[in-house]
Length: 130
Image (cartoon, rainbow, N blue to C red; front, side):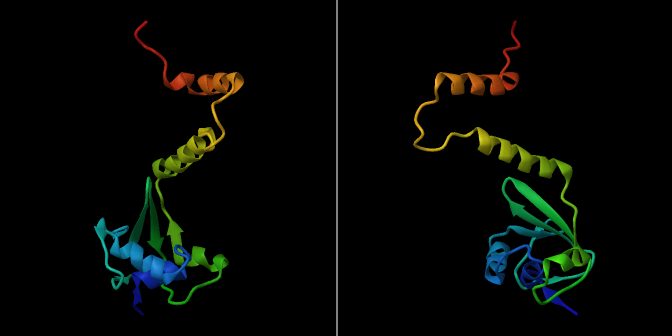
């Protein structure tokens, strides 16, 4: 059985629609063996698929083929997430950065908020010239 990459990505719920999976392939965001692939590329069991979603590159190993969209409980039987820990750390850093950002339109920080921000960022901006 042969399955197109765009169809497989949609079937294992990595993309919400097949057209989004096709578009990602066309834009070069889907890689197999470090090479960008077209949507019509067939997937084989054992392939390592990488998906670029800046700043993270997710990696998945194909365990089984599927043509139809499946229940979320069945996904682990068809793919294995092998994303490296350093890539997962980028996700956590992004979450922390989002928490520290101020909402647009909230105005200037108060004196207390400014001190809290300084205390939070101080370990990263220590002057080593002393």
